[in-house]
Length: 434
Image 1 (cartoon, one colour):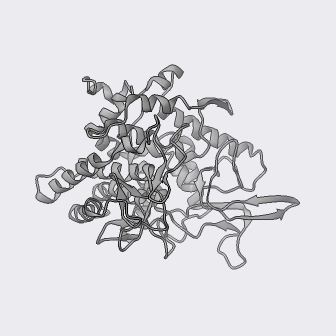
Image 2 (image 1 turned 30 degrees about the horizontal axis):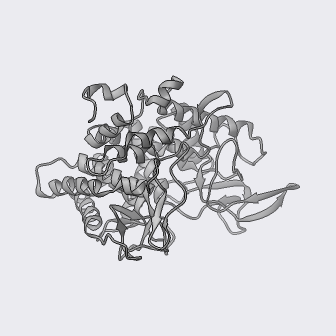
Image 3 (image 1 turned 180 degrees about the vertical axis):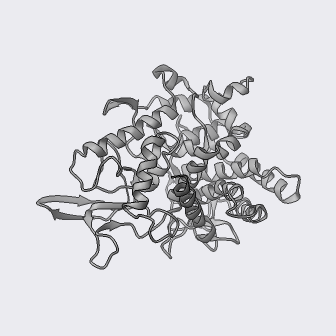
């Protein structure tokens, strides 16, 4: 199994080497030729390069060169009200042209995708600690990029943080409310030394949480599995409790374990009767899909979705599973994740093509194309946002590398402390944040 994980990590890491523009460090959103860059995938790449160095996937000098190209690009790229700028107020557009680095598809300035980019920059700043001009520049640029983000502006005069902004229509109507991947966003916003979120912003966010009982587990509910993973990719939340989790006698790491076990139990019980679901075939999250279409299969009319935020137990669920989401739960529940990864590799053969590890998603209920290698639908793409958590969570399980890097970042510690987190590794830092 260790060999399988090592090979999966190595093959997945290659995405960030080959689906990139080395001149500006931008990472393609997915392997489709016309795909623009994703700033979230680019942030994940910055965090993956240290793994590549430690595991011998790339040299330290190559990682320094790629990291510097990325950070220099974002620091020097145009920030302004122009509709084709790269960003504004220290945040960046969700998708950028791979060559020019300008806004693509009239997309939104994304607060959460900017969060992943800035977290990647901070990870690079922590890892590249040598007394050289190049590594000192990485540290300085990482700090400068983080300090430039105006989190208070992103609140748009409310308590919680908005999803984003466009120059055409202003702030998006949706805010980061309800339990979601924004835990990392609020920690970075609270830790800012320049434009910090107020403590009341975090309290307002947790006030919208939904505690549920599903399949025998009490936990903080969110349907898609990725929500229970993405903040944990960066922050070691074992035994850390904020006021909300203290009130429940739990912590976010244990909560993600329970959410993973709920997914497993749901697949075994398979209430909607999809093909393939079972003990070693599960993982429902935001993913690519075979739709939109409706097919009558074995006398049942099935509606299939395209890309959608699938979730458990309330749906949507159309029979589509994402093996990357299983791998990203490795630290939470290794006893069920390891056999499932083995199944995906050896029985389902979801990485038989040996390109960047697992395919993004598959659906055993939806028939495959007549000339396809599989009898059921398999996504033709790999996505950078899926690849990064595989590399990083395998490494966190093996060595805790990214967790250690982020524990040493004072901005992360400050954000956690201002949110009211206590316990765990924070006990090493007994001075409360100002």
